[in-house]
Image (tube, rainbow, N blue to C red; front, side):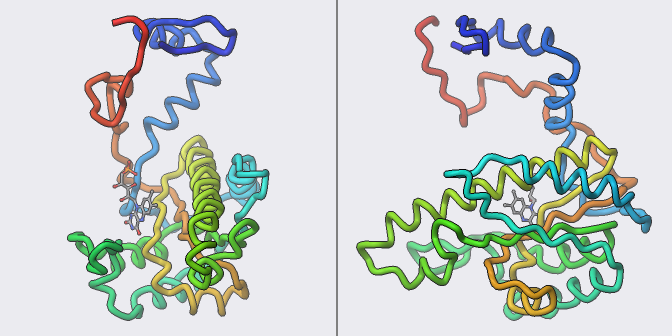
Length: 243
Ligand SMILES: Cc1cc2nc3c(=O)[nH]c(=O)nc-3n(C[C@H](O)[C@H](O)[C@H](O)COP(=O)(O)O)c2cc1C
């Protein structure tokens, strides 16, 4: 079942009609979601209009957050030499090959190839990057969570997770706004390999979550999925009262 804003209940099949009959600006939002892709190559060396950059950043600030805590601080970098400097620091990161998510049950890295080098190449080729800092209004940040007593850890992780969740929404808002302005982007968590150095260059103390690298690319791929509501996806389980 799908509940519409007006409160009536519709079957799954009707939900598709609901989408096509919604106002054009709302349909554009969904089109933007379908066209948002991670783009890593083909960036033109052109500057973005400062007014457009501002609107993209403001879209990020519209994101929801737990207790309206707005855990993000956004560092907008469009200076080319600074972007190159930041990229160089990522390339110099220690143990680059092992910089992939680790499994806490084994302490071992998951079996992914490192993408640190590729991420550095993106940072130095885009028009601007928005570095996302978590100022930790609920958790106090990674340092405080790591120092928590065993009793305090689980409830602290709750707030910490909520901060990350809100930052994800903030990044997605900026990404979709960039797409709406005809730009392409990649979100890069790998850049955190240079967290200490980036902090010191940009003068912040919170946790570096990643960077949204944005520019104009000639390599934009097509939309991700032709059938976003395909009910066969194993990541969606429908609990409906009708068959
Ligand atoms: C939290 C997060 C971290 C990511 N980190 C990186 C990264 O460090 N380097 C990179 O090249 N791509 C990174 N990506 C991009 C993903 O690889 C990409 O979103 C995924 O392959 C799906 O492709 P799509 O964005 O085109 O849908 C990241 C994406 C997310 C959401």
